[in-house]
Length: 216
Image (cartoon, rainbow, N blue to C red; front, side, top):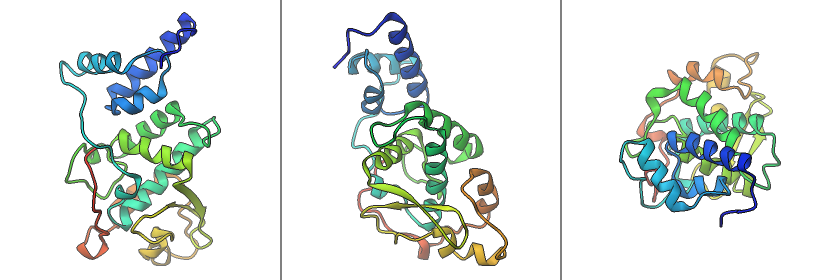
């Protein structure tokens, strides 16, 4: 429901935020969660204007459990989660910080522009789009996902409830901490990931099949 009590300045800020999210192709239901003065139909029309007549996508949104399709993808998701939480100035237990999602996604996407995907086949680099990034931020808010500290590589790794991948540091599970030396610390910064990009496997044996992975 739109908040008609908002000031003119707040409405302008709402429209600016909506534009920033839609330009990046966040799905309209999630954009609607982030604003207070725009209706779903207004957001759909905004999408058509921004994307030259193209309507917003329809269909099911991705489930957080279906996004990581192998151990390697969980390493990248862990890095994005850390970026998002560092960028956020809000109490993430209360709401998704839309501005932090944008900041974290822009940095992540700048590092991996070739990994942008809105439908299958996805690469090992996830989140593949800003909708997956938003779903991860939501999962962090409601407790379906959280970061843990790894005592071996001293990085943070993502744990997703009811995920088919085991709740362990996937970076260490893939053996890279040992291979690169005990003195190496992965840390939690995405800047380390270009090195991993050439190391992390995409072999069939590393894949955890997802039964309902949907295009974002």
